[in-house]
Image: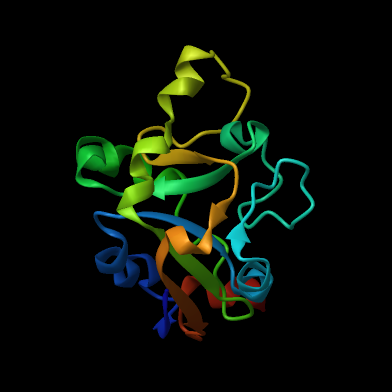
Length: 167
C-alpha cells in the first residue's frame, strides 16, 4: 500500500484534489485517525460511534448498517456528479489544524459494495446518504484491499474566506 503525502492550499482545495479522486472509490477520515487505522490493519465501520465521525454525528444510512462509508467517483456517477457533488465534499473535515487521509479502495472490492439505491428501496428517508456518490462496504475494509493512501495537509491561506471565520 502506497502512502503519499501532499500539501495543498485551503483555497481551491477541492479542485486541487479532483484529479486524484476522479474515477475512484475512496474513504476519507481525519489525518489524526491514520495511525490507528494502520495499527489495527483495517478501516472499521463506526456503527457504535466509538470513533469521532469526520463528517459529523449524522444519522448515516450506511454507518447504521455496519458499513464503511465511501465516496464513489467512478465514471458511472458522472451524469449526477454536478448535482450531488457539493452536498458532501470529501474535503469537509480538512483544515490547517487537521489534514485528511484518503484511502483508495482496490477495484477487486467493487463487486461487494452496496449502492445508495438501498436507501430508496428501504425508504430510509430519515437517514443521510449522498445519492449517486456514496456506497457502503459491508464490515471492515482490510488494508490489503486499499491500493493507496493520500495524506493531505492543508496550508492556511490568510486571504481565503475561511480565514475570516478563524479570527
